[in-house]
Image (tube, rainbow, N blue to C red; front, side, top):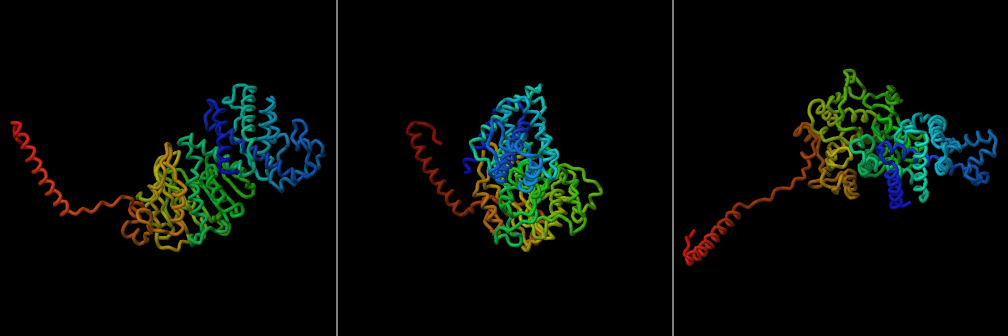
Length: 534
Protein backbone atom coordinates (compact mmCIF):
# COMPACT_ATOMS: atom_id res chain seq x y z
CA UNK A 1 0.00 0.00 0.00
CA UNK A 2 1.30 3.44 -0.91
CA UNK A 3 1.64 6.27 1.59
CA UNK A 4 -1.34 8.00 -0.07
CA UNK A 5 -3.48 4.87 0.31
CA UNK A 6 -2.43 4.54 3.93
CA UNK A 7 -3.37 8.15 4.60
CA UNK A 8 -6.67 7.51 2.85
CA UNK A 9 -7.35 4.53 5.11
CA UNK A 10 -6.39 6.58 8.16
CA UNK A 11 -8.64 9.45 7.09
CA UNK A 12 -11.50 7.03 6.42
CA UNK A 13 -11.22 5.54 9.90
CA UNK A 14 -10.84 8.97 11.48
CA UNK A 15 -13.94 10.22 9.66
CA UNK A 16 -15.87 7.20 10.95
CA UNK A 17 -14.63 7.94 14.48
CA UNK A 18 -15.63 11.58 14.18
CA UNK A 19 -19.10 10.67 12.91
CA UNK A 20 -19.85 7.94 15.42
CA UNK A 21 -18.54 9.23 18.72
CA UNK A 22 -21.33 11.80 19.02
CA UNK A 23 -21.13 13.43 22.44
CA UNK A 24 -18.68 10.82 23.75
CA UNK A 25 -15.28 12.11 24.86
CA UNK A 26 -12.65 11.54 22.15
CA UNK A 27 -10.35 9.68 24.56
CA UNK A 28 -13.13 7.27 25.53
CA UNK A 29 -14.10 6.61 21.93
CA UNK A 30 -10.44 6.14 21.01
CA UNK A 31 -10.28 3.06 23.24
CA UNK A 32 -13.31 1.45 21.54
CA UNK A 33 -12.12 2.28 18.03
CA UNK A 34 -8.56 1.06 18.52
CA UNK A 35 -9.66 -2.11 20.31
CA UNK A 36 -11.93 -3.07 17.42
CA UNK A 37 -9.13 -2.36 14.95
CA UNK A 38 -6.90 -4.59 17.06
CA UNK A 39 -9.47 -7.41 17.04
CA UNK A 40 -9.70 -7.06 13.25
CA UNK A 41 -5.93 -7.46 12.93
CA UNK A 42 -5.71 -10.48 15.25
CA UNK A 43 -8.53 -12.15 13.36
CA UNK A 44 -7.18 -11.47 9.86
CA UNK A 45 -3.71 -12.63 10.80
CA UNK A 46 -5.13 -15.76 12.42
CA UNK A 47 -7.42 -16.67 9.54
CA UNK A 48 -4.69 -16.10 6.93
CA UNK A 49 -2.33 -18.43 8.81
CA UNK A 50 -5.11 -20.99 9.38
CA UNK A 51 -5.87 -21.06 5.66
CA UNK A 52 -2.23 -21.89 4.88
CA UNK A 53 -2.09 -24.45 7.68
CA UNK A 54 -5.27 -26.33 6.73
CA UNK A 55 -4.69 -26.09 2.99
CA UNK A 56 -7.36 -28.02 1.07
CA UNK A 57 -9.21 -28.71 4.32
CA UNK A 58 -9.94 -25.01 4.78
CA UNK A 59 -13.67 -24.80 3.97
CA UNK A 60 -15.64 -22.22 2.07
CA UNK A 61 -18.14 -19.92 3.75
CA UNK A 62 -21.45 -21.60 4.51
CA UNK A 63 -24.22 -19.07 4.85
CA UNK A 64 -23.15 -16.51 7.43
CA UNK A 65 -20.63 -18.81 9.12
CA UNK A 66 -16.91 -18.06 8.89
CA UNK A 67 -14.76 -20.82 7.31
CA UNK A 68 -13.11 -21.71 10.63
CA UNK A 69 -16.49 -22.06 12.30
CA UNK A 70 -17.43 -24.54 9.56
CA UNK A 71 -14.13 -26.44 10.03
CA UNK A 72 -14.64 -26.70 13.80
CA UNK A 73 -18.15 -28.06 13.25
CA UNK A 74 -16.90 -30.72 10.82
CA UNK A 75 -13.98 -31.93 12.94
CA UNK A 76 -13.51 -33.60 16.31
CA UNK A 77 -12.20 -32.07 19.54
CA UNK A 78 -8.86 -33.86 19.14
CA UNK A 79 -8.45 -32.21 15.74
CA UNK A 80 -9.30 -28.82 17.28
CA UNK A 81 -6.61 -29.28 19.92
CA UNK A 82 -3.96 -30.34 17.40
CA UNK A 83 -4.83 -27.41 15.14
CA UNK A 84 -4.69 -24.89 18.03
CA UNK A 85 -1.35 -26.29 19.19
CA UNK A 86 0.07 -25.75 15.73
CA UNK A 87 -1.39 -22.21 15.57
CA UNK A 88 0.32 -21.35 18.84
CA UNK A 89 3.60 -22.34 17.21
CA UNK A 90 2.88 -20.25 14.11
CA UNK A 91 1.25 -17.06 15.39
CA UNK A 92 1.60 -17.53 19.16
CA UNK A 93 -2.14 -17.23 19.89
CA UNK A 94 -5.54 -18.84 19.32
CA UNK A 95 -8.98 -17.31 18.74
CA UNK A 96 -12.17 -19.32 18.80
CA UNK A 97 -14.22 -19.00 15.56
CA UNK A 98 -17.11 -17.23 17.30
CA UNK A 99 -14.76 -14.48 18.50
CA UNK A 100 -13.17 -13.71 15.12
CA UNK A 101 -13.85 -10.32 13.57
CA UNK A 102 -15.73 -11.96 10.69
CA UNK A 103 -18.16 -13.49 13.20
CA UNK A 104 -18.40 -10.31 15.32
CA UNK A 105 -18.99 -8.06 12.28
CA UNK A 106 -21.67 -10.44 11.02
CA UNK A 107 -23.48 -10.12 14.37
CA UNK A 108 -23.19 -6.33 14.04
CA UNK A 109 -24.40 -6.33 10.44
CA UNK A 110 -27.50 -8.35 11.35
CA UNK A 111 -28.09 -6.23 14.49
CA UNK A 112 -27.92 -9.36 16.64
CA UNK A 113 -28.92 -8.98 20.28
CA UNK A 114 -25.96 -11.21 21.17
CA UNK A 115 -23.26 -8.82 19.93
CA UNK A 116 -22.45 -7.10 23.22
CA UNK A 117 -22.42 -10.37 25.17
CA UNK A 118 -20.21 -12.05 22.54
CA UNK A 119 -17.80 -9.10 22.54
CA UNK A 120 -17.42 -9.31 26.31
CA UNK A 121 -16.68 -13.03 26.05
CA UNK A 122 -14.23 -12.43 23.17
CA UNK A 123 -12.26 -9.81 25.11
CA UNK A 124 -12.02 -12.04 28.18
CA UNK A 125 -10.93 -14.98 26.06
CA UNK A 126 -8.17 -12.98 24.33
CA UNK A 127 -6.95 -11.59 27.67
CA UNK A 128 -6.83 -14.91 29.49
CA UNK A 129 -6.59 -17.77 26.98
CA UNK A 130 -5.49 -16.65 23.52
CA UNK A 131 -1.80 -16.21 24.33
CA UNK A 132 0.61 -18.47 26.19
CA UNK A 133 1.95 -15.41 28.02
CA UNK A 134 -0.64 -13.45 29.92
CA UNK A 135 -2.28 -10.41 28.42
CA UNK A 136 -4.50 -9.91 31.43
CA UNK A 137 -6.35 -6.63 31.46
CA UNK A 138 -5.63 -5.88 27.80
CA UNK A 139 -9.19 -4.56 27.38
CA UNK A 140 -9.62 -3.41 30.98
CA UNK A 141 -10.35 0.17 29.95
CA UNK A 142 -13.05 -0.87 27.45
CA UNK A 143 -16.31 -0.70 29.40
CA UNK A 144 -18.88 -2.27 27.08
CA UNK A 145 -21.55 -1.60 29.71
CA UNK A 146 -20.78 2.10 30.01
CA UNK A 147 -23.78 4.42 30.01
CA UNK A 148 -21.85 6.52 27.50
CA UNK A 149 -22.89 3.86 24.98
CA UNK A 150 -26.46 3.80 26.23
CA UNK A 151 -28.47 3.33 29.41
CA UNK A 152 -29.98 -0.04 28.50
CA UNK A 153 -28.38 -3.22 27.12
CA UNK A 154 -30.38 -2.89 23.91
CA UNK A 155 -29.21 0.71 23.42
CA UNK A 156 -25.56 -0.20 23.99
CA UNK A 157 -25.85 -3.21 21.73
CA UNK A 158 -27.30 -1.05 18.95
CA UNK A 159 -24.52 1.56 19.24
CA UNK A 160 -21.84 -1.14 19.11
CA UNK A 161 -23.52 -2.76 16.10
CA UNK A 162 -23.39 0.59 14.32
CA UNK A 163 -19.74 1.28 15.22
CA UNK A 164 -18.49 -2.16 14.19
CA UNK A 165 -20.50 -2.19 10.95
CA UNK A 166 -19.11 1.21 9.94
CA UNK A 167 -15.54 0.14 10.74
CA UNK A 168 -15.99 -3.09 8.76
CA UNK A 169 -17.34 -1.14 5.77
CA UNK A 170 -14.58 1.46 6.00
CA UNK A 171 -11.78 -1.11 6.08
CA UNK A 172 -13.22 -3.53 3.52
CA UNK A 173 -11.86 -1.64 0.49
CA UNK A 174 -8.28 -1.67 1.82
CA UNK A 175 -5.60 -4.31 2.26
CA UNK A 176 -5.36 -5.37 5.89
CA UNK A 177 -1.92 -6.91 6.22
CA UNK A 178 0.12 -6.39 9.38
CA UNK A 179 1.99 -3.25 8.36
CA UNK A 180 -1.12 -1.55 6.99
CA UNK A 181 -3.33 -2.03 10.04
CA UNK A 182 -0.39 -1.23 12.29
CA UNK A 183 0.27 2.03 10.46
CA UNK A 184 -3.46 2.85 10.46
CA UNK A 185 -3.47 2.29 14.24
CA UNK A 186 -0.53 4.72 14.58
CA UNK A 187 -2.32 7.23 12.34
CA UNK A 188 -5.41 7.13 14.55
CA UNK A 189 -3.35 7.48 17.72
CA UNK A 190 -1.82 10.61 16.20
CA UNK A 191 -5.22 12.02 15.30
CA UNK A 192 -6.65 11.33 18.74
CA UNK A 193 -3.53 12.90 20.26
CA UNK A 194 -4.09 16.05 18.20
CA UNK A 195 -7.54 16.36 19.75
CA UNK A 196 -6.44 15.54 23.28
CA UNK A 197 -4.29 18.61 23.95
CA UNK A 198 -2.21 18.24 27.11
CA UNK A 199 -3.42 14.68 27.64
CA UNK A 200 -1.57 13.63 24.48
CA UNK A 201 1.75 13.97 26.25
CA UNK A 202 0.85 10.85 28.21
CA UNK A 203 0.81 8.57 25.21
CA UNK A 204 2.20 10.06 22.03
CA UNK A 205 5.55 11.27 20.73
CA UNK A 206 5.22 13.03 17.34
CA UNK A 207 6.54 10.84 14.54
CA UNK A 208 9.09 13.43 13.43
CA UNK A 209 10.79 13.30 16.86
CA UNK A 210 10.52 9.51 17.01
CA UNK A 211 12.34 9.39 13.68
CA UNK A 212 15.25 11.50 14.96
CA UNK A 213 15.70 9.41 18.11
CA UNK A 214 15.44 6.07 16.28
CA UNK A 215 17.92 7.21 13.62
CA UNK A 216 20.44 8.28 16.26
CA UNK A 217 20.32 5.15 18.46
CA UNK A 218 20.54 2.81 15.47
CA UNK A 219 23.89 4.26 14.35
CA UNK A 220 27.21 2.65 15.29
CA UNK A 221 27.93 3.77 18.86
CA UNK A 222 31.71 4.02 18.58
CA UNK A 223 31.69 5.73 15.19
CA UNK A 224 28.28 6.88 13.89
CA UNK A 225 29.84 7.80 10.52
CA UNK A 226 30.10 4.05 9.80
CA UNK A 227 26.32 3.95 9.56
CA UNK A 228 23.66 1.71 11.06
CA UNK A 229 24.39 -1.16 13.41
CA UNK A 230 23.57 -4.64 12.16
CA UNK A 231 21.67 -5.51 15.34
CA UNK A 232 20.54 -4.06 18.65
CA UNK A 233 20.45 -6.73 21.35
CA UNK A 234 17.80 -5.00 23.47
CA UNK A 235 15.84 -1.75 23.21
CA UNK A 236 14.19 0.01 26.18
CA UNK A 237 11.73 2.87 26.54
CA UNK A 238 10.93 3.34 30.24
CA UNK A 239 8.10 5.83 29.53
CA UNK A 240 6.84 4.18 26.38
CA UNK A 241 3.34 5.62 26.03
CA UNK A 242 1.65 3.89 23.08
CA UNK A 243 4.98 2.39 21.99
CA UNK A 244 5.56 4.52 18.88
CA UNK A 245 9.19 5.26 19.74
CA UNK A 246 10.03 1.58 20.19
CA UNK A 247 8.29 0.68 16.95
CA UNK A 248 10.19 3.41 15.11
CA UNK A 249 13.49 1.87 16.25
CA UNK A 250 12.28 -1.53 15.08
CA UNK A 251 11.23 -0.11 11.74
CA UNK A 252 14.67 1.44 11.32
CA UNK A 253 16.49 -1.79 12.23
CA UNK A 254 14.19 -4.20 10.41
CA UNK A 255 12.12 -7.03 11.87
CA UNK A 256 15.15 -9.18 12.73
CA UNK A 257 17.39 -6.30 13.79
CA UNK A 258 16.39 -6.25 17.46
CA UNK A 259 16.85 -8.94 20.08
CA UNK A 260 13.94 -7.90 22.31
CA UNK A 261 11.87 -4.80 22.99
CA UNK A 262 11.22 -3.63 26.56
CA UNK A 263 8.81 -0.89 27.56
CA UNK A 264 7.33 0.49 30.76
CA UNK A 265 4.25 2.67 31.15
CA UNK A 266 2.51 4.01 34.24
CA UNK A 267 -0.88 4.90 32.71
CA UNK A 268 -3.05 1.76 32.46
CA UNK A 269 -4.94 2.87 29.33
CA UNK A 270 -1.74 3.81 27.52
CA UNK A 271 -0.08 0.59 28.69
CA UNK A 272 -2.84 -1.38 26.97
CA UNK A 273 -2.50 0.74 23.82
CA UNK A 274 1.21 -0.10 23.74
CA UNK A 275 0.63 -3.85 24.05
CA UNK A 276 -1.95 -3.78 21.26
CA UNK A 277 0.35 -1.63 19.15
CA UNK A 278 3.19 -4.17 19.42
CA UNK A 279 0.98 -7.05 18.33
CA UNK A 280 -0.60 -4.97 15.56
CA UNK A 281 2.85 -4.41 14.09
CA UNK A 282 3.49 -8.12 13.86
CA UNK A 283 5.59 -8.67 16.99
CA UNK A 284 5.10 -12.03 18.65
CA UNK A 285 4.43 -11.98 22.38
CA UNK A 286 7.91 -13.47 22.92
CA UNK A 287 9.57 -10.53 21.13
CA UNK A 288 8.51 -7.79 23.54
CA UNK A 289 7.75 -7.16 27.17
CA UNK A 290 5.71 -4.15 28.32
CA UNK A 291 5.41 -3.56 32.06
CA UNK A 292 2.71 -1.55 33.81
CA UNK A 293 4.43 0.43 36.53
CA UNK A 294 6.29 3.53 37.70
CA UNK A 295 9.86 3.89 36.41
CA UNK A 296 10.81 6.32 39.17
CA UNK A 297 9.84 3.78 41.82
CA UNK A 298 11.45 1.07 39.70
CA UNK A 299 8.75 -1.46 40.53
CA UNK A 300 9.65 -3.84 37.68
CA UNK A 301 11.43 -6.92 39.04
CA UNK A 302 13.34 -7.31 35.78
CA UNK A 303 15.06 -3.96 36.36
CA UNK A 304 15.90 -4.70 39.98
CA UNK A 305 18.24 -7.57 39.25
CA UNK A 306 21.37 -7.03 41.35
CA UNK A 307 23.42 -9.84 39.79
CA UNK A 308 25.65 -8.08 37.21
CA UNK A 309 25.56 -11.12 34.92
CA UNK A 310 21.75 -11.02 34.83
CA UNK A 311 21.30 -7.25 34.68
CA UNK A 312 19.31 -6.03 31.66
CA UNK A 313 21.61 -4.09 29.35
CA UNK A 314 20.26 -2.34 26.28
CA UNK A 315 22.06 -1.29 23.12
CA UNK A 316 19.47 1.42 22.54
CA UNK A 317 17.40 3.45 25.00
CA UNK A 318 14.85 6.00 23.82
CA UNK A 319 12.49 8.05 25.97
CA UNK A 320 10.16 11.00 26.06
CA UNK A 321 9.28 11.15 29.78
CA UNK A 322 6.95 13.74 31.39
CA UNK A 323 8.65 17.13 31.48
CA UNK A 324 9.69 18.55 34.88
CA UNK A 325 7.40 16.18 36.77
CA UNK A 326 7.07 16.92 40.48
CA UNK A 327 7.86 13.82 42.53
CA UNK A 328 8.56 12.79 46.12
CA UNK A 329 12.07 11.32 46.37
CA UNK A 330 12.69 9.46 49.63
CA UNK A 331 15.91 9.51 51.68
CA UNK A 332 16.58 5.89 50.72
CA UNK A 333 16.89 6.85 47.05
CA UNK A 334 20.30 8.36 47.80
CA UNK A 335 21.57 4.76 47.99
CA UNK A 336 19.53 3.55 45.02
CA UNK A 337 21.85 1.88 42.48
CA UNK A 338 20.58 4.25 39.77
CA UNK A 339 21.39 7.46 41.65
CA UNK A 340 24.05 6.84 44.28
CA UNK A 341 26.95 7.89 42.04
CA UNK A 342 25.20 11.00 40.75
CA UNK A 343 22.66 12.35 43.22
CA UNK A 344 18.88 12.43 43.42
CA UNK A 345 16.95 14.85 41.22
CA UNK A 346 15.04 17.60 43.11
CA UNK A 347 11.37 17.13 43.92
CA UNK A 348 10.53 20.09 41.64
CA UNK A 349 11.69 18.25 38.49
CA UNK A 350 12.24 14.51 37.98
CA UNK A 351 13.96 14.99 34.61
CA UNK A 352 17.36 13.73 35.75
CA UNK A 353 15.73 10.92 37.74
CA UNK A 354 14.27 9.60 34.48
CA UNK A 355 17.55 10.11 32.64
CA UNK A 356 19.63 8.28 35.26
CA UNK A 357 17.09 5.47 35.47
CA UNK A 358 17.48 4.77 31.76
CA UNK A 359 21.22 5.39 31.69
CA UNK A 360 21.80 2.67 34.28
CA UNK A 361 20.55 0.03 31.83
CA UNK A 362 22.54 1.29 28.84
CA UNK A 363 25.12 -1.20 27.61
CA UNK A 364 28.76 -0.18 27.11
CA UNK A 365 28.19 -0.37 23.35
CA UNK A 366 24.84 1.40 23.42
CA UNK A 367 23.32 4.81 22.73
CA UNK A 368 20.63 6.62 24.70
CA UNK A 369 18.54 9.46 23.28
CA UNK A 370 16.07 11.22 25.57
CA UNK A 371 13.79 14.25 25.07
CA UNK A 372 13.89 16.73 27.96
CA UNK A 373 13.08 20.39 28.70
CA UNK A 374 15.92 22.90 28.34
CA UNK A 375 16.07 23.40 32.12
CA UNK A 376 18.19 20.27 32.51
CA UNK A 377 20.96 22.06 30.60
CA UNK A 378 21.47 24.95 33.02
CA UNK A 379 19.56 24.57 36.30
CA UNK A 380 21.72 24.71 39.43
CA UNK A 381 21.91 22.73 42.67
CA UNK A 382 21.93 18.95 42.45
CA UNK A 383 21.15 19.11 38.72
CA UNK A 384 24.43 20.98 38.19
CA UNK A 385 26.22 18.22 40.09
CA UNK A 386 24.61 15.50 37.97
CA UNK A 387 25.59 17.33 34.76
CA UNK A 388 29.12 17.70 36.10
CA UNK A 389 29.43 13.97 36.85
CA UNK A 390 28.06 12.95 33.44
CA UNK A 391 30.30 15.48 31.69
CA UNK A 392 33.50 14.55 33.54
CA UNK A 393 32.81 10.86 32.82
CA UNK A 394 32.49 11.83 29.13
CA UNK A 395 28.99 10.36 28.89
CA UNK A 396 27.29 13.31 27.16
CA UNK A 397 27.70 12.88 23.42
CA UNK A 398 25.41 15.52 21.96
CA UNK A 399 22.88 18.21 22.89
CA UNK A 400 20.27 18.97 20.22
CA UNK A 401 17.98 21.99 20.55
CA UNK A 402 14.59 21.75 18.82
CA UNK A 403 11.97 24.34 17.84
CA UNK A 404 9.10 25.27 20.15
CA UNK A 405 5.52 24.03 19.77
CA UNK A 406 6.31 20.60 18.33
CA UNK A 407 4.15 18.76 20.88
CA UNK A 408 0.40 18.56 21.34
CA UNK A 409 0.89 18.70 25.10
CA UNK A 410 3.17 21.74 25.45
CA UNK A 411 4.50 24.65 23.44
CA UNK A 412 7.90 24.85 25.14
CA UNK A 413 11.05 24.15 23.15
CA UNK A 414 12.80 20.91 24.12
CA UNK A 415 16.16 19.27 23.59
CA UNK A 416 17.49 15.81 22.88
CA UNK A 417 20.34 14.56 25.05
CA UNK A 418 22.45 11.77 23.54
CA UNK A 419 24.44 9.73 26.08
CA UNK A 420 26.97 6.91 25.81
CA UNK A 421 29.27 4.85 28.00
CA UNK A 422 31.66 4.16 25.11
CA UNK A 423 32.27 7.66 23.78
CA UNK A 424 35.68 8.25 22.19
CA UNK A 425 35.43 12.01 21.45
CA UNK A 426 36.52 14.39 24.21
CA UNK A 427 33.98 17.00 23.18
CA UNK A 428 30.23 17.55 23.08
CA UNK A 429 28.39 18.22 19.83
CA UNK A 430 25.88 21.05 20.15
CA UNK A 431 23.19 21.35 17.46
CA UNK A 432 20.90 24.37 17.46
CA UNK A 433 18.02 23.34 15.20
CA UNK A 434 15.55 25.72 16.85
CA UNK A 435 15.03 27.86 13.75
CA UNK A 436 14.69 25.06 11.19
CA UNK A 437 11.01 24.14 10.92
CA UNK A 438 7.74 24.82 9.15
CA UNK A 439 5.23 26.90 11.09
CA UNK A 440 1.81 25.30 11.41
CA UNK A 441 -1.59 26.52 12.56
CA UNK A 442 -1.60 24.40 15.73
CA UNK A 443 1.82 22.75 15.89
CA UNK A 444 5.11 23.48 14.21
CA UNK A 445 6.53 20.75 12.00
CA UNK A 446 10.02 19.49 11.29
CA UNK A 447 10.28 18.97 7.54
CA UNK A 448 12.06 15.87 6.16
CA UNK A 449 15.00 18.12 5.24
CA UNK A 450 15.15 19.43 8.84
CA UNK A 451 15.20 15.88 10.23
CA UNK A 452 17.86 14.79 7.73
CA UNK A 453 20.03 17.78 8.61
CA UNK A 454 19.90 17.00 12.35
CA UNK A 455 20.72 13.30 11.85
CA UNK A 456 23.46 13.95 9.29
CA UNK A 457 25.07 16.61 11.48
CA UNK A 458 25.07 14.18 14.40
CA UNK A 459 26.27 11.21 12.35
CA UNK A 460 29.28 13.00 10.84
CA UNK A 461 29.78 15.40 13.74
CA UNK A 462 29.66 18.35 11.37
CA UNK A 463 30.26 21.95 12.36
CA UNK A 464 28.30 24.74 10.70
CA UNK A 465 28.08 28.42 11.51
CA UNK A 466 24.97 29.27 13.56
CA UNK A 467 23.91 25.59 13.56
CA UNK A 468 26.46 23.22 15.17
CA UNK A 469 29.77 23.17 17.05
CA UNK A 470 31.98 20.65 18.82
CA UNK A 471 32.99 22.01 22.19
CA UNK A 472 35.92 20.47 24.13
CA UNK A 473 35.06 19.20 27.60
CA UNK A 474 37.77 21.47 29.03
CA UNK A 475 35.94 24.54 27.69
CA UNK A 476 32.61 23.34 29.11
CA UNK A 477 34.24 22.88 32.52
CA UNK A 478 36.64 25.81 32.76
CA UNK A 479 34.69 28.52 30.95
CA UNK A 480 31.07 27.52 31.56
CA UNK A 481 31.06 25.44 34.78
CA UNK A 482 29.18 22.58 33.09
CA UNK A 483 26.36 24.81 31.84
CA UNK A 484 25.13 23.12 28.64
CA UNK A 485 22.77 25.87 27.51
CA UNK A 486 22.97 25.59 23.72
CA UNK A 487 22.97 29.32 22.99
CA UNK A 488 26.28 29.65 24.89
CA UNK A 489 27.97 27.56 22.25
CA UNK A 490 25.86 27.94 19.09
CA UNK A 491 24.16 31.30 18.81
CA UNK A 492 21.64 31.88 16.04
CA UNK A 493 21.73 35.65 16.54
CA UNK A 494 22.71 37.61 13.46
CA UNK A 495 26.00 39.47 13.82
CA UNK A 496 25.55 43.22 13.82
CA UNK A 497 26.74 44.99 10.70
CA UNK A 498 30.08 46.76 11.09
CA UNK A 499 29.70 50.56 10.86
CA UNK A 500 32.36 52.85 9.36
CA UNK A 501 32.06 55.94 11.57
CA UNK A 502 34.11 58.20 9.25
CA UNK A 503 31.80 57.32 6.37
CA UNK A 504 28.76 58.09 8.52
CA UNK A 505 30.32 61.44 9.49
CA UNK A 506 30.87 62.38 5.82
CA UNK A 507 27.26 61.43 5.01
CA UNK A 508 25.94 63.62 7.83
CA UNK A 509 28.03 66.60 6.57
CA UNK A 510 26.63 66.09 3.08
CA UNK A 511 23.08 65.94 4.41
CA UNK A 512 23.65 69.21 6.36
CA UNK A 513 24.83 70.93 3.15
CA UNK A 514 21.72 69.79 1.28
CA UNK A 515 19.50 70.98 4.11
CA UNK A 516 21.06 74.47 3.96
CA UNK A 517 20.66 74.62 0.17
CA UNK A 518 17.02 73.49 0.38
CA UNK A 519 16.27 76.04 3.13
CA UNK A 520 17.77 78.84 1.01
CA UNK A 521 15.50 77.96 -1.92
CA UNK A 522 12.48 77.60 0.36
CA UNK A 523 13.10 81.03 2.00
CA UNK A 524 13.32 82.56 -1.45
CA UNK A 525 9.78 81.40 -2.19
CA UNK A 526 8.55 82.69 1.18
CA UNK A 527 10.15 86.12 0.49
CA UNK A 528 8.38 86.39 -2.89
CA UNK A 529 5.08 85.63 -1.17
CA UNK A 530 5.74 88.24 1.53
CA UNK A 531 5.89 85.63 4.25
CA UNK A 532 8.26 85.31 7.15
CA UNK A 533 11.39 83.33 6.37
CA UNK A 534 12.49 80.34 8.49
